[in-house]
Image (cartoon, rainbow, N blue to C red; front, top):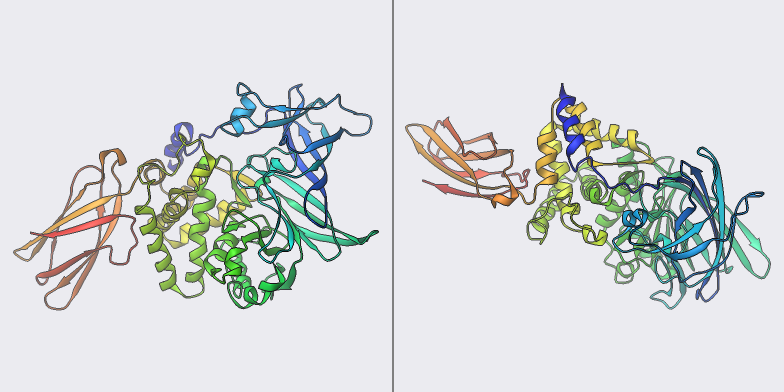
Length: 544
């Protein structure tokens, strides 16, 4: 059966193996976060309620929470007042902290527990100026702003949480701001309230579970422009007033079309709205669920690109709705966005632009310093270093190669099934492999093993000769032995002296040199491997 090879793969392969990041005793279900922001944006006052399901054990609830913020009080539900909470640095011997980051961070330990199956809630009141995760700063035009920027595990710098994508939850925000400010966050806007002392309160709620790294709020003097709607998903631009016209007329002019195209190709947009927000972020764009944050500098210098918008929009399906359970499977987020981003151009009948971006991805990857490492690199403990050319351009190429291997029909049917199966949940590479094998109706373990677990890519030397009306072609793999050998279907074009062309595919098998003989109607003048650029490989050609 097809499944037999994959069962072996799932039992032993890094495609399926992930470190156990889930807390053994609790599953966070919902965060209720209330923020009060001052006019000068110098500090915050906040209240976070964490509702969680008791799944076992008898220990305290432990939440990731930075030490800089001052905790005023920790309370439980009526009748379940916890003993005194402690705010301390985690121990390197604690398996819980070993699961979350290379070095122990700070933990808020709350001695409130129940029986398995109970749902409990803890509310933490705190204040101060976060040292990371929530930026309180003036923008390029001198106006105060507040923007969250959580990736990968920086949410705990400004609210207590289980700061790992394996534990997704719903979230609601209540943000109190000066009257000239607007506040945006995940989910649907529930209302804007006028408060005494010239304050307003913005209320947002996401009813879909999302990872903590995409739970965000942004606030400041922002102009809001509604975009045309082709689907049922309302979209809007949130910009600094000085940059509003540029955003509407430039990189976001096809933002609505992107959501429409991806919805038709992949499945329903996963959230109730999509806001595109000019913000403070250390990244060019950050795919926060239903509220994408973009760096302000490309707005200010007018260099913002449509490619970034497509990439971050594609993330709403892959990374946000379907989230990698383990950081070492980051390509399930970044590789998908790096492929479906440029795929937008193919969907709107701009295939040359799609090929141009994929060729750029190829060059960037091959020139990088990570070709000696595999995509799923479990030896890398620094999460930020996983933001590399393996998980972005090579990840995109893995999907492109998979599409060619199984054909468009099976590929896109498999992608739709993968999305619908794991929407609002988490996945590993083996989950994708299992779905794609089902639609391809044949084993694909060899494909995922070589492209995800081996470093590098194939380097192919082609040597050909012509004698007695027959072409003799020999193909050898010459990449370093440490990269392993690859199974590749290489397209070959031959130009003949009579002006005709011959085209065929060569199945390059692992290890042994591949030898092909083929009768030709005329003498070859030129042999061109992979003329359309559909294989991630380096090739050289020698005529004998």
